[in-house]
Length: 353
Ligand code: 13P
Ligand code: SF4
Image (cartoon, rainbow, N blue to C red):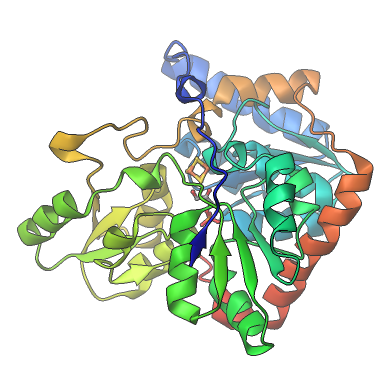
């Protein structure tokens, strides 16, 4: 394994968000009904990630939208007949929707919801990195900009990364992977593929700590440990299940244990509780006494999606995603390959909730 020499610090200030005033019950109910009316009037479908606030997830469920992982969000948005998609998540999710559906208007509650993996992999630096490995097949995580996807052969999400890299390995390909180093390391160990890795990380999952997790496991010996593969290697090694958000929800529903320690964004508990109402969910520890935690198991950019910003973007059609068309066309090839692979290998990659 070779790590990229060029690494980029993600500006920590970027993750500090201003707190909005809390809404009262009546105000909240009024906003929810305004959002539902506007979704209808704008011929819009709400496509939400599991990490956004449960109030947004609930609206997506009640209005025929979807709540899903990155792969399913992409697929749902592309296949839906609505002329407008409202993507509640982070920027790369809105951009993926636009890559796949250029004819649709794609709105987001905010355009400032970034992702540390995307920010930590600028296209110019990535191009130079790629030039060092002209023989490699370029596989990038969906958590990247359109410009980086345009430089890739394949886009993948965490639910499809292992089978897709296995498939490339079987063809004798060497892989250049970006940007998440923990996910890259996990894929390399699972597949044995020859991989070079960009040195990026997620500010949320990077905070999970194995020593504190061990203590928690000792306190809950019957609990199964569920880990998203953006977490550090030592945390992944303690897992009973490693998987994408959808795959972790499926594990809560399908496994026999009644307690689960969960190492991913805690907003996923809303769907996990729905999937298995009687089961107990425990947050995996971030940092313990050694905490440098900037997230504490919740993505600060996902948290920027709220009822008010969703209502505003629907009302005024602000926060629309536009992408460079030449880049979009190149990024589409790599993104479509992911959807085609997913369709052909559906049973291996999806843990639909
Ligand atoms: P999933 O594709 O598993 O939903 O992950 C997206 C993500 O950003 C996790 O941090
Ligand atoms: Fe990016 Fe991490 Fe937030 Fe997911 S949780 S969107 S990888 S910063």
